[in-house]
Length: 368
Image (cartoon, rainbow, N blue to C red; front, side):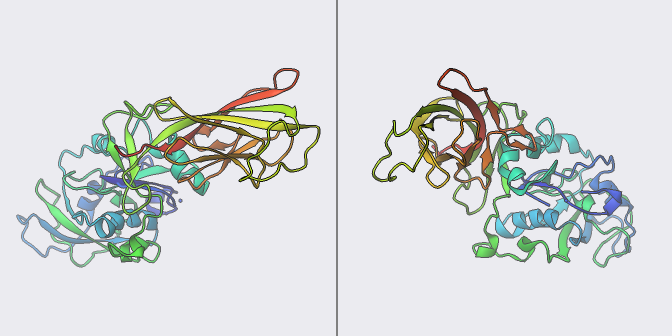
């Protein structure tokens, strides 16, 4: 299954929803107890075929008010080349279990849980969002993809192409098409071309069946990864940690390497940073220490991508800034994302002054 995190703004069924990241496998969970196929079964459509025919024709999805949702479906169909345009009615309607199996429901929406909220929601400054899946959770799950039709299916008029007026039965199926796709670029994209480049929000579950803990436990929790043609395609997103100690030291106590350049002018005391990174299993992977500036951060190696740390001031009370390659979001010591604070920051301690903090952030698990 494929899915994405989404905050859609649409007036459909009176729900207020807005626009964001994607996992190719979940649904809009906006508090409605009405399921996708319940709505479809109530649609008034012309009886253009005998009642014993399972082919319910073509159902056209109006994407005008749900561009992100259509975009996710079209990513599965056009960019991943998956055969997910045909939907099969599921008489069991095991929506809740399907959402768990897809990875969208991980004890709540995975989009609002660290480290995935940090990778998808926070870079776009989103608030609470839901996880969207294709195929929708109310249909038989014998193909992959992600989205919830009830948010953008036009049910108010008779649409050409639909077949039959009887209630849906086991074995019924229909084919999906899209219209008004101006805001859904993947609906007009072609596999192998730039139009099908992952925008960073499309992802999938690589392992499900459990939940997402806090702190995230890679060994037992659900696992997720971006898909398609990206630098981080099919590389699991995990959670790493950095321990940072800031200390007041005599100026020029630590000289910079020739490659970095001379230490900039500073007062009698300056703030030295010492950072240690830990991977998704809690193992120490690298340390670095220096007196960073905004222009010349310290770079801690040892993970799949490097972590940069710097400060915009010369006081030990000034916040540290962080950046991990592969995540489009810088954060600072006191930053709070949709799922909570990134860092645990201590007080200044000791006569010379030291200050410790631990920050959790999304990182990547190298392929074996």
